[in-house]
Image (tube, rainbow, N blue to C red; front, side):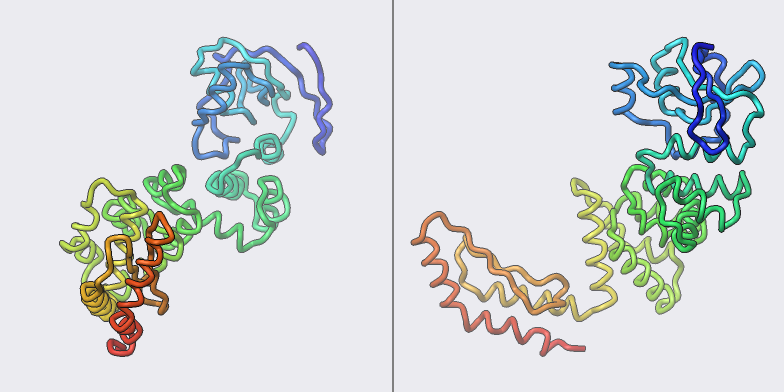
Length: 336
């Protein structure tokens, strides 16, 4: 033992600073681990260059040590094949497991993702038997959550996601609010949605709601299964498109669903395309439709490199006013 530190925590526990062999550390014991992954490239580079700046916290366990906080730091040392680490230790049995978990949360609450917070709440509830009131008053503040039962219930529900969706959430390929929506589906439906849609598309929260509403209404209206709905050649063609981002594919998917559920959109687009063909715009002028024709705002984009070019393009637009006026009759003539 090199030095004894007085703990700032509520029970005034003594910490000892020791040099510990990594072979004595129980890496497989994840009792106090409350993150989704040990991966942290920035931390690894920092430790490789400068070493550990903050010593991890360990609990004596016979002649071994259980990790309380510092899982990522210790994992980096293990990858770097460092033989020893300077760590703070507490005596075996000096703190009850539930209190030790709170120490772990307090010492390891920086850079927690929303999903990490879900794991912490779930572990507190299931492994350490914290009731809802203790989750709200004690655990939530330690991990930076609003002490609200609604917020806590939402975060705990995300644990119901299947592993594949948890991985998307970890990689930021799934929005956290979207994860809350998907958590209400059964694991079988989650598996189908992931394998046939979500691994190929990225949806915003509002788009995912559109997708779910469209899916439910179509299944009820057409009396088909989810697999049958997602196996149509139109949807397969959308998902098979290469060389586009998951975001772009998601937007196209939502566009297709809107047109499928609201047939008048297809007719609006066909009429809009006909009007564009009737226009005699030059190549530097482009007419764009409003998203899903929900607003009667049409964009005319003009590209010019001189005032004379701008004048010519304005004259061109003015000469096409009669045709352009037809745009504002589209919704009237095709109202369903």
